[in-house]
Length: 385
Image 1 (cartoon, helix red, strand yellow):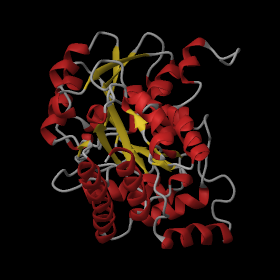
Image 2 (cartoon, rainbow, N blue to C red):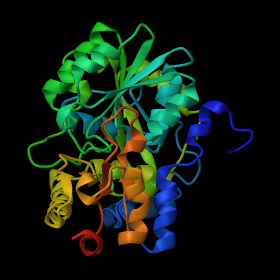
Image 3 (cartoon, rainbow, N blue to C red):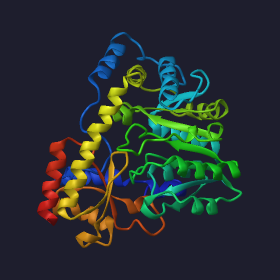
Image 4 (cartoon, one colour):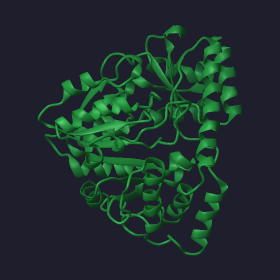
């Protein structure tokens, strides 16, 4: 324990991702824990970033809220894909990844005494960021089939609830919220005058018929919704750390105030590349989804063939398995033994939840090269087949 760390942040001193990645390196394991692809995104975007650097574009501080080129590209993207009209000058802010946008939004909107309401399991950074604000995190378990439970969500609202934080496509479960589910959630936000932070970092990573529906497109929700996007997830350049938020002017103005006092600016040349990416033809987004869906199928079919119970995801990089069929009642024990037993790393979902129901679930990241997935399946088959 770090002696001088304030008590509210002590639970977040280390992360399971750092722990498991270190374990993967120490044991030579296939790392399916951390959610990043092991191949680069479009080469043309790399050229745009390199050309920007060579031309001196973005090598010094870019505009505080993002280059106008990227903000215009984000506004055009929202209109093109979702029919949402946002003003690039006032309704968009660019940040150091979606994670900084989320932190800035929470810091701008809540403080000690407020409550932030969200479903669990959830992306682990949410808990740490809410703790940074001094607000209280209130969680509601996803219902049967790992679907959102609006009845339980409504019951959890109190007079102190200020923000509803939702995530679709959803990390770690891979579900994609339907329009009807969002409408039910939206009615709760309207009835209780809640602000919605909608983490849509995986907005272009959905499969089959489970098309992503942005929260802000649902009736009555645009004026109360901050929508978060990610260039890293959409174009497979997670190391570039380019994220953004868009929404109504008053909410984005609040986010801008805080965000400018965090990193101030970042990733100037990469912003030009992501702007070019957002203007890519529809074929890029279709082919990107098709390629990832093929990896999902390869991975999930492989797990099923071994006899590992797997929940086929509708989106994201992640698939969830229940390890009780492998003789484990504790996913944390399974994940910590797996590198030595099978030479593979996964993440226990129970660390992203506080209510019963996730104790035997693990998350696998299938956004890897086919040969890497095949090697992981071979190792798992050897250990459990």
